Length: 236
Image 1 (cartoon, rainbow, N blue to C red):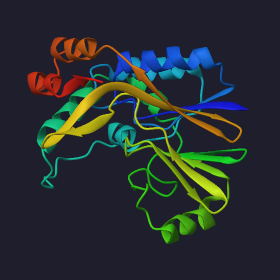
Image 2: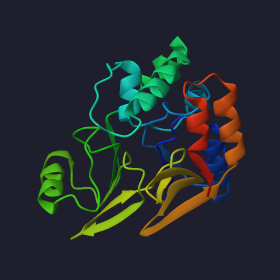
Image 3: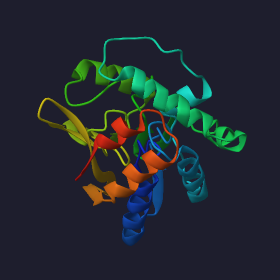
């Protein structure tokens, strides 16, 4: 069975549309979304609606959880955290009641034959697991949440294939907010990332999209800190 796995859309409609166009060419049997559909992008409602039209299972991401349970701003010393909080709050105000009802249907995790899908970890959508997560922690999670041969999660925006004994831990990267380090900081790169799984085959896909469309949307739709945020995007 061929499965397309994607997530971390973050309200980026041009990226989401580019990924879906590429996915269609590969004719998967199943689609799975790993959450973080809204927040940070200029099209939060449009992304919720487009995803809903696909009828595929969707995992609840931390950004989606924040839409349902708004968080107060708490400074933690991260760069631009006030600006990001303001972007997230703006995105929440763009969602209709019907959009919020859709987000409420997203699940904490989902199990398919041989595969477990989640956002951060099956225990917590905010937990970071990846290349450096101790094997002991991963085995703790497996003992609680299942022995599927493939686990796939999002949250980190970093593509990952990690093999541990008889199972694999995967991350497709991010559809709408892929990033990379350039100079002293990070930039958002106009490439949309997802995974194709077909039996034992794992294919990491990167799809280009129009960075100018993203910048124009940020500037035109009334987002806070728009000039700064549009300037954070570069061609990938």
